[in-house]
Length: 435
Image 1 (cartoon, rainbow, N blue to C red):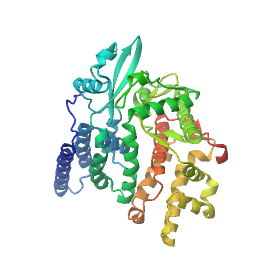
Image 2: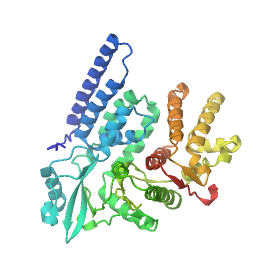
Image 3: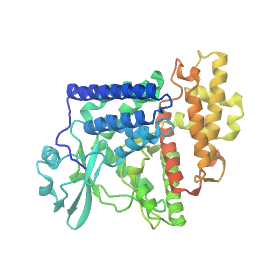
Image 4: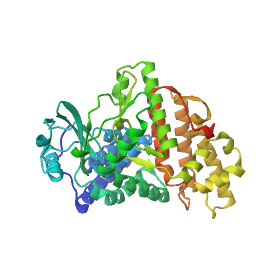
């Protein structure tokens, strides 16, 4: 993969790149309508492929927040056409890497030394490149290490990048502006935290200490003395990302062990720690054929407020969903209903929420759940597509749902997708009070 020798870091240069990309997208629409005039049966498939390629190339060059948003959208399969899912998913672990001179420059800024001075060996080429940073392999005193280096200018460009991304997101994905504003506000806070590598090391150590006794999980050790606000040094973990893992035809026992470890990992964080690794995309996990699972990135962590936790998980109770008298106050607490909603609006939103919650809460309604059931996921996608077309919801005067739900919903949806990819049936442990 071709390396980048520079990243546009100024607001003007980054904005210019977006304008150039916008012109390309506009040209793609002109071509599409031209094709449609010649052949009315022409589908959007070519348009989506052209737009996805142009937008991804632009975001890959810019790195940072813009590329991270693409990565997040790729996880939300019901929101994106397939062309965007496939292209944007590349940002999870195969974005174009930075050239070595830029890596050396970062090390000299933070340690006063080059990587070759700090380590016994250090790969000149990145072994993995994602949205916010890239990883090199190093050795020191016989130990194999992973060294993550943040791209220049990422932290400084978070706010301006998200403003530039917003029009693309609204036009391409048809999102409600109020919901998008709330979404972007929460995303901005998390992205600013993700660019603070000292905070990431602290959280990584804390969460791995709390989760180290969960069966079949393993974590790297972090080295604070060789880390900084833009560099993280940790143990190198061997394993495979999920697609490569599955290509090796792992046994059902290995897949099930990993699936159960994933569920138990998230169960413990959410229900016992009230702090969760909120970025369950495939690039953050390494799987082994012996049924063990490595977790390698704690950049995105969501702290769960107690009042939100209590209201959110009450909704996982099938009994509550059929009891409007108890359900409605919970929906007010979660900002899904508002005092100025009309009775007609309230009735509509309650019915939508019931349908969504019964569908997404299904794994919590039994002691085990078969995530290999593809019909369940097809039902989720169809429901999401139908709800996205409800005019009253799209034109709502309020965003529907607490901002805290954005990352919790994303966490569960990402977890469900991983378990579906593994094609496993697992024990869906839950808090005692939810039984």
